[in-house]
Length: 142
Image: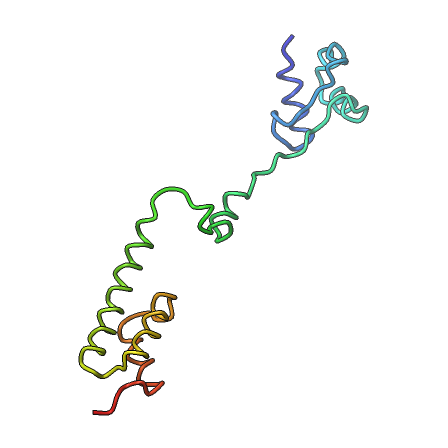
């Protein structure tokens, strides 16, 4: 009871693959007796043989990759790369601030404010701290 040849004919007539051909299970004997292209095309017109719609590919994973759903709660696995970069950066910034304070170039109150800003992510690097201090004229006059 193989309908392979009928399925192939229908696929070529409908310009699709054999896996997309649907044959009505109630009319299998009718389809089995059809052996020419004409007979298959009449069965297609009658609706006994139909083409199923294409199945799409989910884009959910692509959306997730493209920047969405990457907040802290959605992340899985190690937090290493980002955290290590942060640790290295914040240590350099705090070292620069301590240096300015110990050289008495920075007042203790402005040191505390800048330390809080650094913790909040206001500075990119030690040199950025220096730029900020010079722009706001926070350096003490000797």
